[in-house]
Image (cartoon, rainbow, N blue to C red; front, side, top):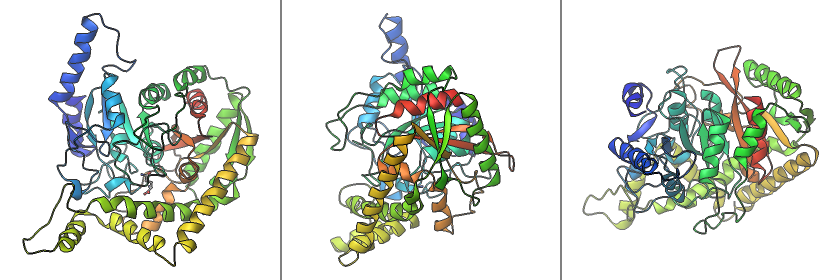
Length: 453
Ligand code: GLN
C-alpha cells in the first residue's frame, strides 16, 4: 500500500501525511506476534488503514486541513486511534478533508483539494474525500471518516465505496477535533460491507472520556453483515422516504435508486413509501445548529494554546488572536463562525438557534413514526454524482444542497450507511444508496447493505 501511495497519490491528494516506516514497524509487530504463536489482536490485525486527519495521533501531525494547526502534533492519541493500534491495524497516514470537516467536496482544505479517482477533474465529495479517494484508488483497504452531516456517506457515494455513520455516542469522540459536538461521529469506511463491519466493531464501544458516549454493548454488525450476505431480506420492511426523492435530483441518481428499490424487493424485502414531512427543514436547521456549535468549539484556536501564532512583537493579546485567526482559518470556517456567532447572540438566539432546536425535535419525531412502520429507511445518498472541481466553490448554498439526504440522520443521532448502487446512466459516475436505521440498530444497516451489495 505504501508503494501504491507513492505511485498514485501525487495526482489525487488523498493523504496529508504518509506514515512510511512507522506503518511498516506496526505491520512487523503483527508479523512477529503471529510468528511467536500469539492469537491476532483482532480479525483486522495487519490490515492497514487511512485515518482522517481530524483524529489525534502522537506520532503524526493532526492538522484538520487547517493552517491554524499546521505541523501540530497532539500530546495524546484519540480513543479511536488507540483502538486501532490495539487491534494491530497499521496506520498508513492521515487523509485530507475540508478544513475542520466543513464542506462537501474536500476543496476547503488549506493544503489543496483531493481528486476523485473515477475522474480526476471531479471532487471526491467531502468532508472525508481523502479517506474515500484512498479506498477507491486502492491506496488503503480500510479508512476512518467522521460524519457530522454526511461526510462519511456522501464521499462513499461519490467514489463507489462503503461508509457508515454509526449511532451517535457509540464511537468515542475523545481526541476527535470537534466540529459540531452534538452531531460529530467517527465511523468506518471500506470497499465492502463486511470489511466496514469488521472495522465498526473495532472502533465502537463506551468511553468514559467522552461525556456523550453511550454505555451499551457494541452492536453485532459483523454477524449481521454475514447474515445479509446470504441475500435474503424476507421479513425486512423498508421505507422509501417520500421527501428524499425529488425531480430536482439528477435523473441518473433517481433511476439508480429506483433500480435499487426493485432489487431490495427481489431480495424479499417489503418496500413501502413513508412520509417525513419535517425533513424539508433539515438543511435550514442543520446550518444554524452546526455553525452555532462551530463558533463555540473553534474559540479554542486563540493563538495561545495550539499551532499557529502571529505576533509581530508590539501586538496586544487581542491583536495576536485576531491576526492568527484571520490568517489561520479559511473562508468557509470564517463564514460558519460568523453565522454561528450571530445565531447565538442575545436577541437572535430564540429566533434562530431556538427554532432550529425545535425543528430538530420534529425531525426525530418523523423518524420515530416512520420506524413504527418499517425496519430501515432508504434514499439516494446524494442528489447528484461527483461534480467538477471549482463548480460549486463560489456558491455555498449549492454546495450545502449535496447534504440534503444525509443531514436528518445526524440531527436525530441515528445511524446510516452508503453502499454503492451502480453507475449513473447519465454520466457513468458512481451513485450511492443510503440505508438508515434507528439509534442502536446499526446491525440493520449491515444486514440490508450486505444483501444489496
Ligand atoms: N457537508 C456537511 C457540512 O459541510 C457535512 C460535513 C460533515 O459531515 N463533517 O457541514
